[in-house]
Length: 134
Image (tube, rainbow, N blue to C red; front, top):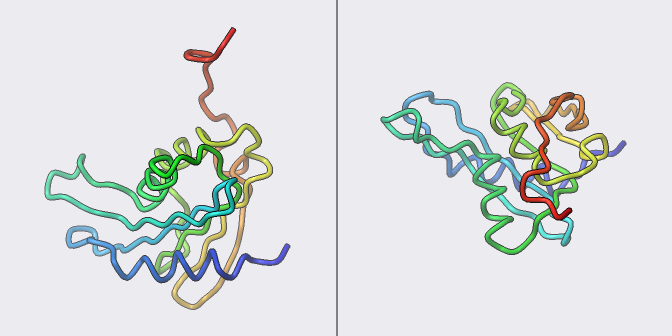
C-alpha cells in the first residue's frame, strides 16, 4: 500500500504549530474525511494537564465542525513515529464502522513511515447502541 503523500505532508506541516511547552512532544495529525477533505490538528497543551488536546482529536473536531462524520485515513507526525494514545484511538473509532479499513500512517523525523489499520490499534473498541435508531 502506497503512503498518502499529501496526507502525511499535511500532518508534518501542522505539527510545526503545536503548543507543547510541557511535554516538548509536538504532534501533527491529518484526517481524510469521507467527503474527500483533509482536516488537520496539532496538540495544544495546558498547565492543567487534563485540559490538553491531542492532535488527532483536534483534527476530528475540525472535521465534525465542518459537517463530516466519517474518516477514511489518518496520518500522524511525531519525532519518533509514536502511535495515537488510547483516547485518540477511541475517538477515531467513533467515526468509522469499518476500523479494519481505516489506515493510520505514522511518520517520524527521519521520514520513516509505517501504518496500521485502526482495528489493529484498537481491536476491541467500545461500542454501544445508545442514541441509535431502533
